[in-house]
Amino acid sequence: MNKIYLDNAATTPLSEEVIDAMVGTMKMNFGNPSSTHSFGQEAKILLENVRRQIADYLHVTPAEIIFTSCGTESNNMIIKSSVENLGVERIISSPLEHKCVSESILDMKNRKGVEVAYIRPNEKGDIDLNKLEELLKASDKKTLVSLMHVNNEIGNIYDIKRIAELCKANNALFHSDTVQTMAHMPLDFSDIAVDFASCSAHKFHGPKGAGFAFIRKASGLKGIITGGPQERSLRAGTENVAGIVGLGKALEISIKNMEAYATHMQEIKDYAIERLSAEVSGIKFNGRSAEKENSLYTVLSALLPYKNPLIGLQLDMKGIAISQGSACSSGASKPSMVMMMVLSEDEMDGCTPLRISFSHMTTKAEIDALVSALKEISSDYAIEKTNVEHR
Ligand code: PLP
Image 1 (cartoon, rainbow, N blue to C red):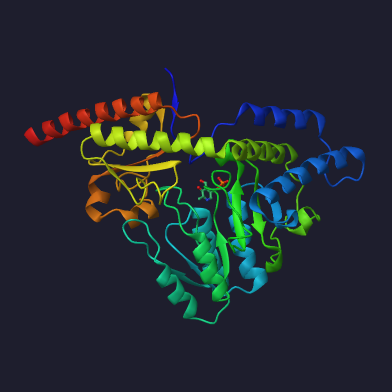
Image 2: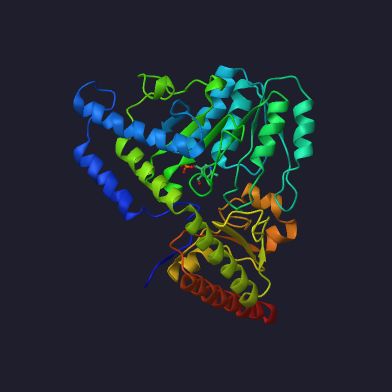
């Protein structure tokens, strides 16, 4: 069976060039980048080259890039250190954030007594920036705003440039989880006044276990992992040299092909919307997912008009890997917070969400296979439903 991978928002396959670069580094550059001898210094040069490359992409200085193990670590570090070292007493966020952000905020609320205000999105997943401004003006406490750039479940894009402006005008720090956008779209942090951002290499055909945090120098943020002076004492621990080289290679490929990849993925997404709408009766799309200007081309969040908690498994048995989302309220899976925000109670009870996510390697033939599989499952479901009704 030819397997089809449509879960690229969860992770992406490594590209051959990335694997080659990493293997080469593991074989030839095993030195510890903190060692002063030539083995160490050769590894250090590799790290600094990638740091410079990231800084150029984001239009910031290399000193503002701190290598970490992943997006989760970067987001934890930024949120927790803002409270513990920068005196943040209040956090404004939304229920749409990834768990590594929302759980870090909750931890700071429970352990440090930080005040938390959430902006509830509307049913399209939009965040009201007037509400943000109102909240920013409502308190003199030192505030961190944490709002993501692109949502990983519905693909909505948020206006982080405007959010950053509101934060600056009201003396608040601004953290944006940019894990779903780094290397997928141009980002210019000399124009967007974000203080902190995060990146994870495995979301753009790089390796797992490598990421970075962007920490604006003027913020004065400190690290939370203590030990040696690595990463300018902001993140102790010997760096994952091969992983970082892989991150750099993946970023280089993404930047070189950004426009072509974007065009391809948007075409695939448009095709998926068109075919699914025509062939899967009653299908809908969640949030701003089906709107070109307001969602990223990597993610399409669909809603099937019947409840089938086993759909992920059924598609997997047909060789199609997809993320189900978890609005289904039965069984062990808890409803996802994002789905709770964008679906009505009836939809939560009676429908099935599907997250279809693309890469530059996704083909129309793979979308055709998904459509056929969904038609088959949907018709089985219709037969089953009729049998139950007639019993
Ligand atoms: N933030 C967002 C928006 C994500 O989609 C993810 C991963 O799914 C993360 C953070 C966590 O990244 P990592 O898997 O590198 O820890």
